[in-house]
Amino acid sequence: MTAIKTVVREGALQGRLPARELARACVESCASAAAGLAALRAGLDRAPGVRVDDGAVATAFHSERHVLVDGRAPVTFAPLSRFWRTSDGWVRTHANYPHHRARLLGVLGVPEDVGAVEAALAERTSTEVEESVHAAGGLAVALRTPEAWAAHEQGAEVARRPLVEHERLDEARARVLAPIDGAPLLPAAGVRVLDLTRVLAGPVATRTLALLGADVLRLDPPYLPELPDQHADTGFGKRSALLDLAADRAAFEELLAGADVVVTGYRPGALDRFGLSPRALAERRPGIVVAQVSAWGAYGPWAGRRGFDSLVQVATGIAAIEGSKEAPGALPAQALDHGTGYLLAGAVLRALTEQASEGGSRFVRLALARTAQWLLNGVTAGPAGERLYDGPGPWLAETNSALGRLRYALPPVSFTGGPVDWARPPTPWGSDSARWD
Image (tube, rainbow, N blue to C red; front, top):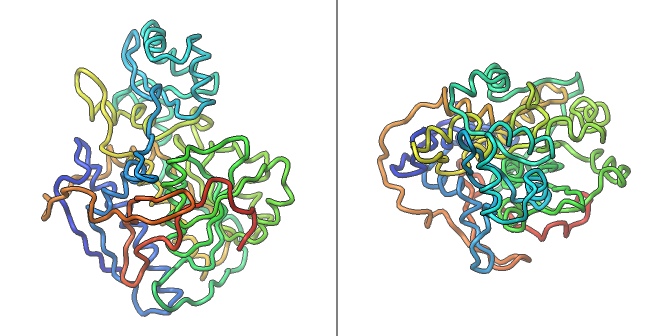
C-alpha cells in the first residue's frame, strides 16, 4: 500500500464544482501507479511514498497558460473559439486550428470577422449550429444542462462506462522490464512510447511518461502542424518527428517493432485504416500496451465526433453550472484534459506493471466526457485548505531550449526518490528523426 501525503491548499482551482479534488485525485492516481512500478523494478519491499500538493497540481493544470517562450505570453484560444448567443440559447465553437476555422466560416457563409460570425449565429438555433458545423467537419456544441446531457443518448452511453476501461487483448507472454537503480527512480526507463496524440489530454499523458523515464517519440503528419505554444508546453522530455502514415508505412512498422506502448488521441476509429486498432497492433507487436483517449468515447452516436475540453464542458452541463443567468462559464482550468491525461498515464503504468507478471497485450481507454461525468456525479468536495494557494511561483521553472528561453510548470507527479523535472526541454516541432534512440 502506497503512503500518500496530501497538502491541501485553499484557493487552488476554485469553482462551483470540485475541480481541485478532481485534479488532486487524478495526479494521485498517476503518482501511485508510478511508485508501484518503481517498487517492482527496483526490488523494493514497499512502494515509495507519494506526495500530492494542491499548489503543484493547480499550477500544472494551467501549464499551457504558464508557458513563456522568450518572455512572450502564450496564445491559448483564438478569437473565434468562444461562446456565442443563438436564437434559443448558447453555443461554443472551437476554431484554434485553421482547418476548423475555415469549416466554421464555410457553414456560416461569412468572412473571418467576429461581428459577422456573431450575427450569423444569432439567427440559428444552437442544435442547428451544432449539427451543421459537425457535418462540415468543424466544431460547435450547444449548451446543455446536466439533466439534458443525462437524457441525451451519448450522455447515457457515457454514464454506463467505467472511468478507465481496460482489456487484455491476448495471451502474449510477460515482457520483463530490466531492473532500475540509482537516482532518480525512473519507473518507465527503457520503455519506448509511440505518441500519436494532439492537443492536451494525450500529450499530457505522454509528457508524464517521459518525466518517468520513457523514450517518447511523438509522430505528427507533416500536413497538420501543431500550435507552437501548445507544442512547447507538452513537448518536455519527448522527441518530435514527422511521419505520413499512409506514405511511410514501412518506417512506422519499424518503429512499432521496437515500441512497448502506443498512445493515440485521435477520434476513435480514425487510425484504424492504418492498421492501428488495438487488436491489429497487438497482432503485429504481441505484448504491446495500447492507450486511447478521445473527447466523447468510442461508443454512442457521438463516437466519431471531434471534441475538446471546452466543448465537453458545454455539452455535459459543466458550463451551465459554472456560469450565471447572463452567460455560461467554465472550470478554472482545462481540468478534463489535464485530469484525463494523468489518469491515462497512470493506466499505462498499471498495464506495464500487470503485464510484467501476467503477460498479455493490454488496452486502456479514457474519454473526456467520462471524466466530466465523474466530476459531476462522483467527485466530492474535500476539506478546507490547511494552507493558501497564493500563486504558481514555487512551481514554475526556467530553462534554455532550441525554442528559446522557456518558463514552464513543474510536474505535479511526485514520489520519494522520483524525478522532479524532465530530463530535457522540448525540441522544435518535427525536428527529430523518426527512429528510436
